[in-house]
Image (cartoon, rainbow, N blue to C red; front, side):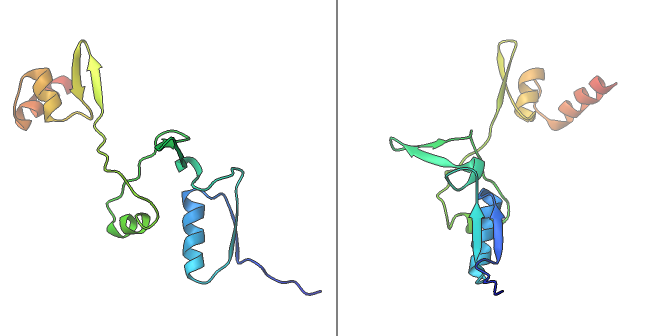
Length: 126
């Protein structure tokens, strides 16, 4: 019996990992078959264009890295929008920065230096 090998890898799931692995192996001359239960690539990071609006079909997704090589690789396949995560908290009629920072402490305690903030935090810990 002769068995003809069609693929080097069978990849289950074409989310970020599966798609990236398949692309890398393809560059090394390997043949991959990807199977997925969904009818699209990208897994939970799938975005569908509806009426000229990019809709994150499974909730918002944020890609971030400090590694320039990874950033350059990812930008070969998609256009990324700049995003800065700056959550706020609403408490007793006021809005505060999260995570806590000097702006938060200045507003809560009417102070202006890290030493003042450290002193109050140490007092509260006791």
